[in-house]
Length: 153
Image (cartoon, rainbow, N blue to C red):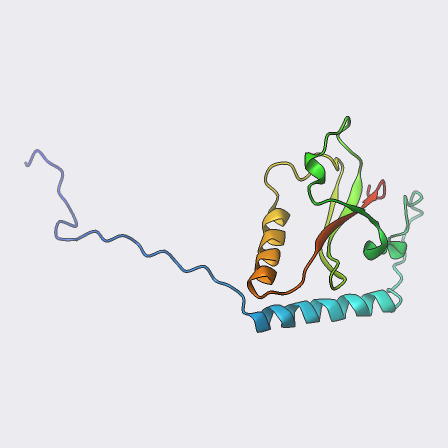
């Protein structure tokens, strides 16, 4: 018996793996995507939503979701989670808006508005990518955060 372990791939030369190129959406695809989202959101805003019925008497609502207009909510800076706070925040719905075109990019909810975005949050990368594409193609965008406090729950 040989004292060393046998090598199954003795004549294989090791080569470094190629890095995949970062995929970037084209200008045409970005504009088409934004247009489709905008048209759908505009349609929903202009048309009466379907009425949902309830099987049981439910506790009173904190707010009427059909009356929420994300484009009219109070504006909060994107860096809101860095501001000093003496509480963990409120339960809320929040919306990331491209106010340059009136496009809702993201909808979220949290029980602790001052803590939700600290650390890793996928939406930060999503918004950064969205803004990077706009800078790349020299398009106007203005991402803002609008918040509806005390409504979720």
